[in-house]
Length: 574
Image (cartoon, rainbow, N blue to C red):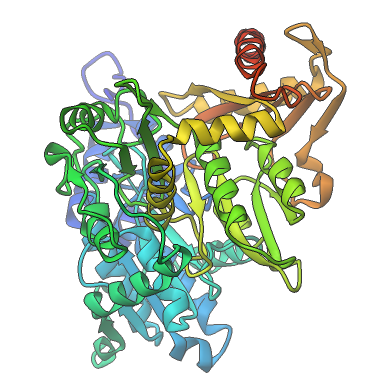
């Protein structure tokens, strides 16, 4: 960004209060690169860019801190990581000596800056007197979440930006239950961090480094494998040819070995995406939901006549699946379709009244129908796996059989209290092998569910921000929609408006609106908690059509969904 000049080629002076704020940050920034970055902005008189860096500090969103790498409190950098960790360490210490001794697990992925941020996190925590466990190499987010529970730690931190663009990084914080922190803990960490400020020294005080313990990664992965493979049927079929891509992330360090340990043949790798690369050179966005992200995997699957394509995002907490349809084509499953398939399968091969299934308010309502059919409890939460993972906590005597969110996040075992694209891949592979052994595909299983419970078609619309003002514009859209809600959409009357900002339906307050169009459709709108996006979630539902009328019902639902998409797009555009 180029700063304006006073007409003589010299930038106008930075206002004194802003210059003082920036100078104070520079004095406490441990990284010479980001110090120089801010000094350059001061020298250039780039007031607009400095305001962008300092007016909107990163805060805990749906999944912790996440933002673009760069200098200042509004970017991801060593100072922000160290300051946040000081807050995490103080939060642990408030729970006493037992919590400090239980310690903090620190993991990281292969993004730019991740290893340095993890080392800083470990150093700051150890320097604050918290026992610290550091993973020795880049590994998936589910491994860090597993380690918190497995080791009985007081907390965990994972350095990752998940599926965000290459320019980003992030910081996830976990509580002692192995799930991501929720209010009021996230607010308390932020308050403590703000009070303490960035620690002055990168290294812990003399003698404190003994508090940093390098975890035995091999032993941890063995324990993880033993835990998550228990969800499978040990006598189930394993004949399956799968293609796998970690999308340049860290899933390749775990999933191929995990499949072999479960009895499957090694998956065929997508070689151009098999090794970690923080620049994600073969994809526009390293998100398996994005159009084109799986083109290489699908081409490889066609080449080797695979049955299944498995794809993780860069930190392997999400899973995408495509299957061979028996006619030489591959069909991508939506997040809702895969969630329904996994739930239908796990419900069919388990029993007991203690089972609970859970999803979010923006996911398909099909899971509630599956739960009712099976006679098990159903829970609906806010978006974010920190809520899904705790769905059983308020239901004594219940255990979470499966939790999922439409954004390709699945939990199929309570060994990990977060979404886990690795263990979910195991169950997806087993289900595909079961169907293959019966001469069927995953599409046939979807047809079975739709015939019994109705066609449930879902879709998303997203407005993506490209500048610093995007979040404010999206907030203004939400204000407009609250003031003037639609009376009808696509010819269907709005029969109910739910404003989750009021903490409706027993859920914590959230900036989210839902419009119910009788039993035929539903629309939910919310700003993203991890990216500058405004998202709309659409669902159309038919009655159970049976096999004979399934094609007709799908066609009718598809036309209705297209009309609803157009109507909502016009509504959001204002």
